[in-house]
Image (tube, rainbow, N blue to C red; front, side, top):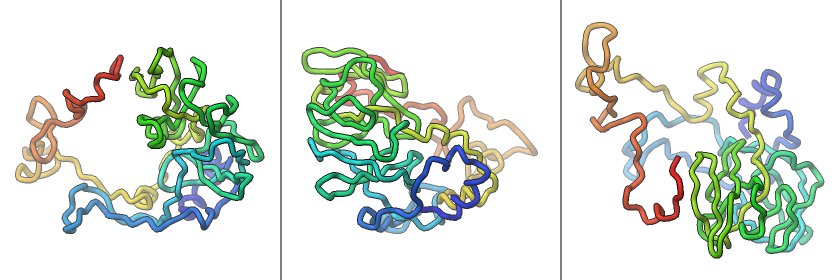
Length: 270
């Protein structure tokens, strides 16, 4: 855990860390997390403004939830430095321990279950076809058996709108409405730590602990370094639309491929 960040914010921002019940993670569920610092295999910087940061260990999260029909008991709610959502430690009755994303209102001692006939309780995982319309869900699969890929950020949730023979219509947090295979699994509930975005950084060092390095505006650079640069004093960018340092359109340009195969499953774009 990022103890430095925890110590400086636990008193000033109790709504972020107040529901945590354990500080140190489960040793069997952590692995080494190598920070690439924005560099590729040759050591060249390919993503700017990354580097430094507090030492972290990656928590192995169970996105697939393959422990079918085996009851799990919630043992703790913990901080995860690799995501803005909190995580919960689950002890299954067969002795296996797993981390899952923490859903809001899940309490210590509650029981969760995965499977085709799992109850409709918070934290339970079952196919979309078995979940009634109007339910809030998260950790949704795009491909059956691959594991949850959608709706995993703090405070987010999706909602089932309708069903047909082979697909379920789901409204995502981005307001996008799309078809998903009815055999895809999803977890019931809304992801907790919804106040994460209200947390205010109180000094520049807290951002450096997260591995983010300083960013310089293009307007204060020289023309040889950025398309927005140059001029005397504070001047406009001198272009119709903002550009990246390499002259490509920036800020709001959609990067999704127009001929992507999965476009067929999108009913309404955000």
